[in-house]
Length: 371
Image (cartoon, rainbow, N blue to C red; front, side, top):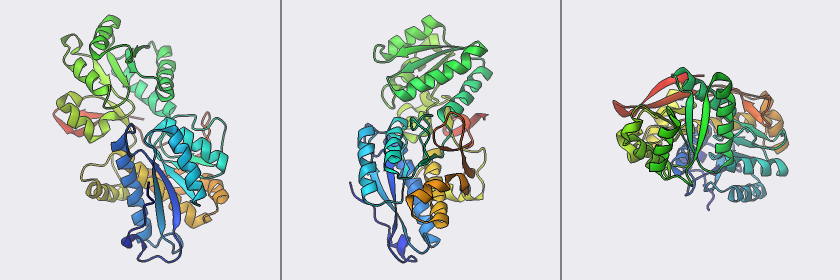
């Protein structure tokens, strides 16, 4: 894996050695490559804008990118390598279990890590001053999703599952939130059930909603196709709280079948001036509409650049600065705080939407619920 050098445009106005940020991104399978591509686009655009604005006290900002491939061990090894290379801080990661491994190692080594896009509540076992996070904790976002389900009249929920700490955490959040309100959650293990058998189980349990707590594209895409073609399930809601329908690959693989599948995304109903400008630039860079993950990448760099300008490149000073940071991001004013039950410094909270792809125009999104 290669270090990504700053472009001539990035360095033409800056003097002195680069300030280096280690970027952890899933860029190969079994990682969610499309999410990684969007995250990296946001990080790179943020670096470009920082360097166009004079860098960090006249020094260029530089990303040192490592592909985690959704592998926790690979991520932990990358943290060791990047710490040895002298990066001022770490950024990125999309997959929650991978981000947890990176955060644990960053905490042990004393390297500040700003997590861009992973939501698992327990990023570290114990409270740490070294790690901060931009996206909402899973418990916050998934409770909002559960409220959406209840508001739409769904109390008999089935979840198609695979083994994962992240999926297990999601099931627990949903069950704890729904049960006191009359909701039930039944688990359908996709290791044991083919898509057709999932359909049979949905009928047997009289479920009114099926949530996809599984990998993408397999087995999520075959399950959606099977459910959409089963006349017994014409009225069932398919949901994907983890955000699979946000990305263009979902629409390419499923077409009309991928519409009307509500998911969580972390965007405001309307972008402000900065968000609108970044949206335009990201569209040019990606040659498609940017996902919320791309905005998370940009905001990560905006926060780190502000901290580096204010507190310098000393790692301990960066970690101490999280509670004092206040940055205008693409999706609102970013501040970090200690939040009950969360072990890291947390932006509480980014905007949260439940959205889906419009059946009348699957390239267009509809906002169904906000929290």
